[in-house]
Image (cartoon, rainbow, N blue to C red; front, side):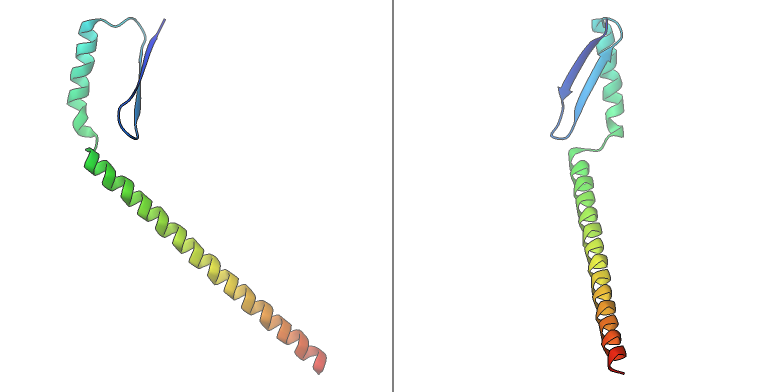
Length: 94
């Protein structure tokens, strides 16, 4: 039977630990040492905040660019429709 632990470790992160067998105190100590060694491979809170803000700004830019593109298409379609109406009216008058 596997033991499973789940922890909320920060505002954005949770961790699930699943043991395939009953862990010993020595195994837990080894796990702690491994996590201590590996922690430098993860961003600091400040780095994570910068990364999160960068992503938020980038997504905002993409939305803005899509809105501009959509408005451009709308204006182009309206201009085309107006041009077609002028051509249709001009064709009847001749």
